[in-house]
Length: 287
Image (tube, rainbow, N blue to C red; front, side):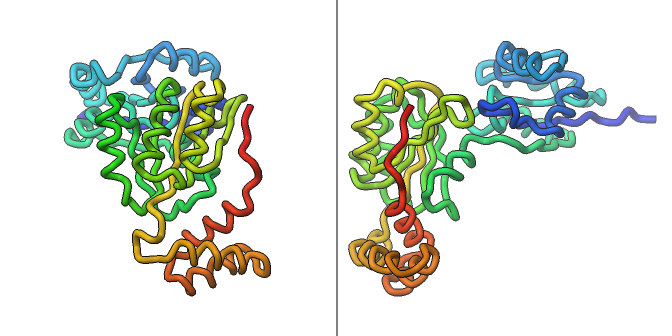
């Protein structure tokens, strides 16, 4: 009888708070023949904290091509391998694409064990339209390349999500303000789910100024959420939309005010509702 093929499990792990590990993810890590990890030291510490002991395989951007054949051979022998990144859901700005693609091409079952993700976590607290969004990952480190990429995104109507390193956050926010507009609303989510989680809200100009002047702003893991191109890009009078929302919000609930303002101006209900939420926002938080 032919030996059954193994299974590749793509396992989401906490982005900060260890309590976010799911029972299913824990079971997958406990039962895997080995865990393919972006950083074996980091994942080793995670497994130790969870009380799990499993063999670790290094799989990162610099060795993935070389490592794939070895892992495929183990999968073909019937082993179950768990794939994890340093935090959150693998493959999203992390290694793993080559392995998953090769496994599917080889007829290996690839199974997702869903869970924490910095992208969706930041969107959930941003207070910006999330019905449609696009994830741009990390912007280029070089100034000219970063500005060029942002200029191509200036008219993107969907909410934008970026990751950024703390030492580049001030420069990136300054470039975002210059290329997308000083008044574009955005959120910087720092250290999500961790003890020092902080959500900064404001216009890109305001956030760029805070990043340049506040040390805490430039620390930890950072996710940026930026509102899409304003309504006037689609032929909507933004000034009229804001005035309609302002007046209607005094008499109606946010959802009702947004619905009527959208009908009056031709904006989407999501755009109008986002304005009602920004008007009601408290002052920005910081550590």
